[in-house]
Image (cartoon, rainbow, N blue to C red; front, side, top):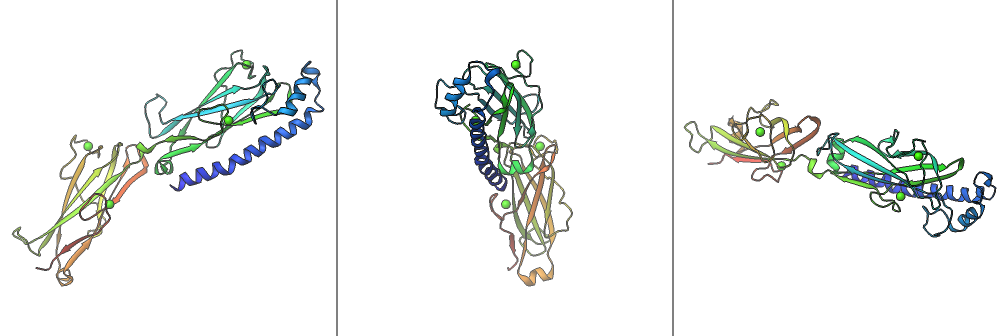
Length: 328
Ligand SMILES: [Ca+2]
Ligand SMILES: [Ca+2]
Ligand SMILES: [Ca+2]
Ligand SMILES: [Ca+2]
């Protein structure tokens, strides 16, 4: 959850700054409006004066009859690949930029910046007259793909936001901006993409039986049985089972469980391995053998997205080492 907290913290840090930035721009606009040359917007001087009283509509939607250039960006995200199929590798973000000005003002120098993707390249879809100006009534949309990281998968979600900046057409000093919202042109909330289904989970149980050379209960060998289960919805590959008792060499297997025989640990497959350990005099003197196994795998095609688990002695949930009692 570290990444989640970091994202959230960053967002919480940035949000007030952006708001302060918007406010400062707003105050700045109020000052420059007093001296703005209105010759390029004949008839708008009165509106600017009203605007000075009522504020930028994007900052506070107060006035209904003000001349207030405004802009909004709505950012949505889905964990899909470029074909649109569900994915745990990429998120497609879509940014919808609207001209929220109150009296048909045009906006230029539109720049959309994402906190995880940087400045979005254009051209956007929706510049109907192809003049690079966000005319009143136009809705521009951008899209971009984000590569999901192992940290994102660990956090089970990706939290992000975008900002849009522009200026009133012909007036570089009259700036407008907005912080994105996932739904509402008036909102400023982060976009949260849930990738909980992408988190690989594997669970390992290790049981044992001490036997004699003839196969009955005894102190010659320990037969270990390792069972592990893919508990999530993604396919795992490169499955490696090791044990503290043995060398670091992986234990060969599986003995059973690869139902479709593809060498991959598919969702809900339960693989079973077994290994035999020769009991030593030291073990007998100690009265028990204690050890623990670990299984590790990665998501198919994503070597950096690792699932692993340390064995429990009687369940798929715990982390207790296996104690094999040798006292007869
Ligand atoms: Ca246009
Ligand atoms: Ca907003
Ligand atoms: Ca399989
Ligand atoms: Ca465990």
